[in-house]
Length: 361
Image (cartoon, rainbow, N blue to C red; front, side, top):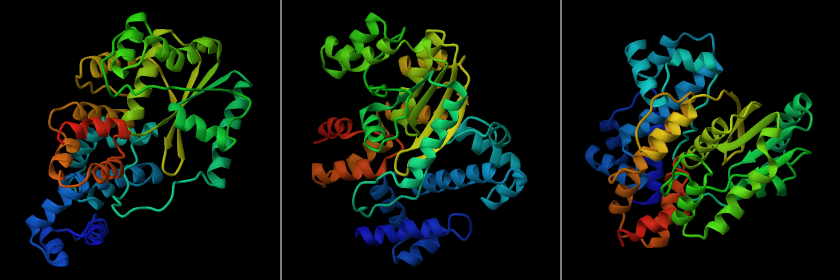
């Protein structure tokens, strides 16, 4: 199916997300059978039509819960096709790990789930002036409260370079967290000798190289000397597993200062701020990262989503593997491009995808 035709199918689904959707009407609009539409949607997007509609509608509902705090939950439930508040709550809690009421009360965060775009977008995204002002204002607000005793921890060298090149670094301290905790084996305690050895082996680098790139930047800064930490991490699975590991480490060293999570939507650089409370992340880290077991006690919906994606990623059959198997006729370059484009919620890089593609080609 032509890319433009496929995009028109996605756009039609989006236009009929809340009301007026039926697979039969989609088939009539596209000029294909309903079965063929469902099959091509899955093949070209890596997600089933039913799952896409669920994730998009629940994301929009979660935004309405925050944006309209006085709107009754039952009204939102009915708008998005649920016959009762109870049915809406069951689905919401399964997806986000908390009820709509608790989500609204806590003003918590979810993963951004935007409309799928399979047509190529021209050029790289640049942080515009308004976003620079917003990011600087958020930092200035906390700097006025904590003076200079602030450490900013950014998810990886790419974000660190973005901050530096866009002159977003104020007088506080900044350090990148150069890890990819969603891949390879790990252990506990974090940054112990055993941890350093296992992680270095997994990344196929020397332990000395790993220590220089990952551990030494933290060791030099003496985290416990700071009154406030600002954690700049994206909302995808890759970033959330890094964030989980870092929060577990902060519990491990008994950090006493304040912690703010600045959730960065990396395509737009929209920022959501959330003040964190330590206490549950060590058990989450051990259950999820070490034992690959589900733990429902995540305090953040966005982390709950990241955990679900992480456990799914480690299954022998998952949406990414299925997409690769369904598109083996594509060149490796085209397949890699589509994986990067269609699975932003996983946040994986080209090296992870290349390794996976080699299993099938």
